[in-house]
Length: 387
Image (cartoon, rainbow, N blue to C red; front, side, top):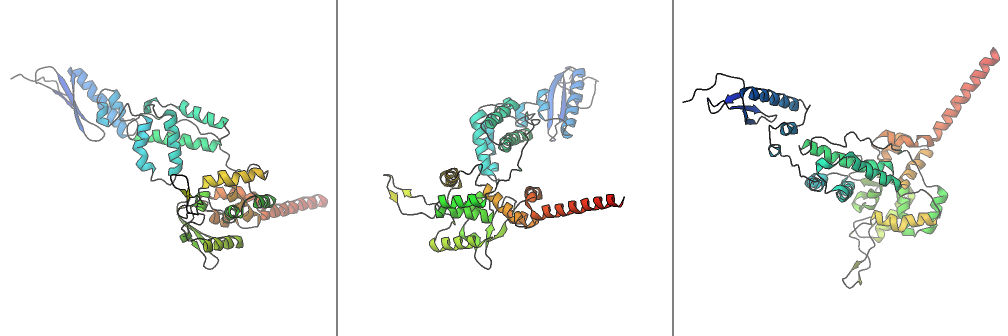
């Protein structure tokens, strides 16, 4: 039986004994034991120290587990890494989690965009230049910087997840700066513009515009409003479920016009939705089937494209979107003297900074500032007169 070498070091062993061939054994960051054939004792001792240092840095979050692959201690399969994983396949793997998010509709659109543009690229091939090229093209088409940033942030978050799951070592978009955003734009509908729209639009369509101005709900909440969330007791209120702020809230009927149009619609309908779709179901031969279907709510995008925008253009109103009707609600409240905190609650703003964009419209701010300045000037003039 061969006698083993007298050379000894922690984590280094000779196999078979007396062969002069040394192995190392070590534990990775997950506690799994590994053994590896090295060669000479000196090389085995050096490699054992090297892997120990790498594992220590990984535990301290100073290095990615893929460093073990690059140093030759592990095969990529041991870490669950897939060097050939494409963005398209990775997004498909993430879909179950993405669908649970409140912003799924936006994420679905972002997913389709990036799959169309760079879906065939491997995760390791995606660079910052791909995001820069996309947002440059969007900016040239007049798309807002905030919209461009949301697309870039989605891709960045996907790559961050790839790093977390061990499919990627470095996120190339991590240091890409977002575009400066200007979300302080406040455009509201003037009363003369409102009268123009009322004259041009059909009464049934203008009711939606009036409801949006008087209640201040987001577009998705307006068109997705069901009768079970409308309560006519006392002043009357609307239950806004799953609001963007993260909780349900109650918004009272803010004007008599709201109560009148809701009561009229309730009397004329027996369906689920406050603003139902008027689309006819068709048979295969193209003939209409039934006069009206109440089982689907009106599509917000379709209403804006076919009804609202054409009317706005015909009225000669510039730079007005459907979301500006929500700005109209907040602006009119502030100009009427309603406290900003109350406006924040009615609008469902999560952050008070969002409501502060309307602060300059508050009449008491101008009155108080003017009064203070007048008093200050009078005091200074009095002091000069005394001197």
